[in-house]
Length: 193
Image (cartoon, rainbow, N blue to C red):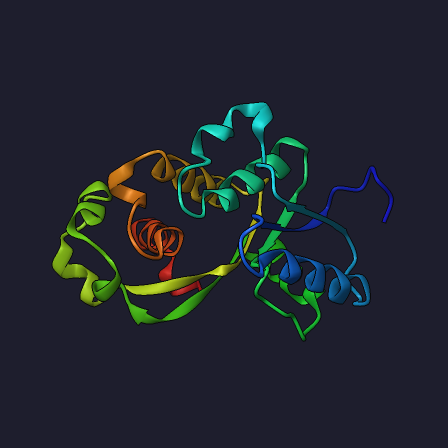
């Protein structure tokens, strides 16, 4: 892939904590040996998208995902796939990019409802009754793909970024997963996962 082509991009990030840097190195090795067609940006340490002031979210748990997606948007990438450093892909990642191109995003369902992992303050931010969380399924935030030219994907990213700026919306266990799940629910996209 030449530098000017900005169709497909994979991103991952790790702080210097615990075993996460080794996960990034392992992921780099696996993807470099795969059939993936596109660019791969990764970072160990530092903070993504400081050029647009996203360093103000450095204290927010898991906000690095959102900031890195925004950085790729600023750099002009079309389809971007976030992969957690703990993930080890076995299937062709090119298939996921086909889903992103077709639907505008790739987000997988989780395996539980939000009720046990959420606080009423979070649902209040999203103007959703807390009782409703017993029937709202979580999504997985370990692999998130967005077509950053697609209005729906732009709205997902913008809403996720806005939520990360709000203590009530983002300072609870599984904060990135919970907020993304509620965004998907409020956008009525749950049936498209």
